[in-house]
Length: 433
Image (cartoon, rainbow, N blue to C red; front, side, top):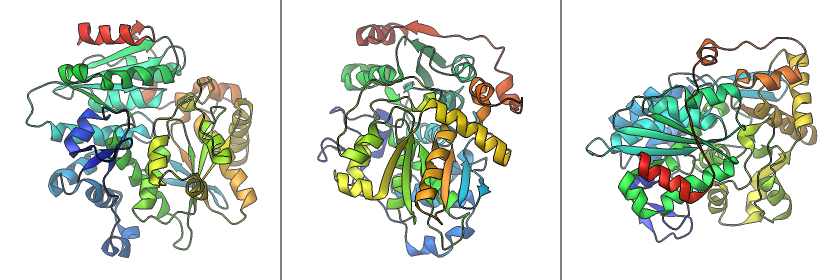
């Protein structure tokens, strides 16, 4: 299969170039030339497949012409070593737990698959691969864990100073080895701009053999479609789920849209954001107005210029009318988020992280407006990654921190401090790598 830039469909590349170069030189994003549709043989017994079998079918639809079946199956099986269970809180109120991976965040699905796909694509290369990633919290930790000690790779993680939780920061900065953390004096949008600037510099990209692990890379999105299928089949056969997705850079929602294009029956998508509501505003008004992000307690959604918006537009042929038919948007404040964490804890003895709490508010709003709907709220991170938020929301010490996270608390933070200017970042790359 070939892949093209959202800015220029005539610019077509192979899977290897799309994954390893990540960003087209025209600053678009790569999309498949044609979107696959799963055939009747899949839908005949899809609810009876294992999570791994389902993942293999979906991955094969995208990459099967370029990656041998045996290799693809191994990638999927090595990725899906943990579950994504659906928990029911009340009638029509379901939560998909995506935090059972090594770094307790949904990013583990994409990062683990990507690391294995990149290793296969570069199996005959003799050059070291440099993975650049900007993070607002969970992406960096998942990528660091997925690529740690992977031969032939080095990882550079850019994160905004003072804008990730303490335990999230330790996941980025305490591994060492082939992982380097850059603490950027700015916002996530600044980090993302720096990463994109590196990929738009062709001489730098070639000399350092750069690739991205952000959701600008299509290889991050395909494995995230797996759990949409896994969630939907856990409901009754007659029910079309409404997926409610905490959204920042909109990679997770784009993955859901890809699942729908593959043929997954979906009732609707709801994009839930904090006050960084660029996309919900667009869905209401038809006007897309990116702006600097604002810091909130749901920090992974603090994005003012979401990269994957262009992919969303491409999937709907650039039509606002078509997009708002399938996707709605809602935004909530920090105060409402804290209140939701308290309410869910009191009613259901269930503790949500701040991102999932934002989505749960949107899900409740949707069910109130659409009685009988079945919403699936994506709980994208373990609440223990945000102990400060839990302490502010809850009066009891009910939060248990998993051992694999707790052991990071006392490890030394190792990070390079850097401003948010492109020349300084480029100079650091050239002199340090």
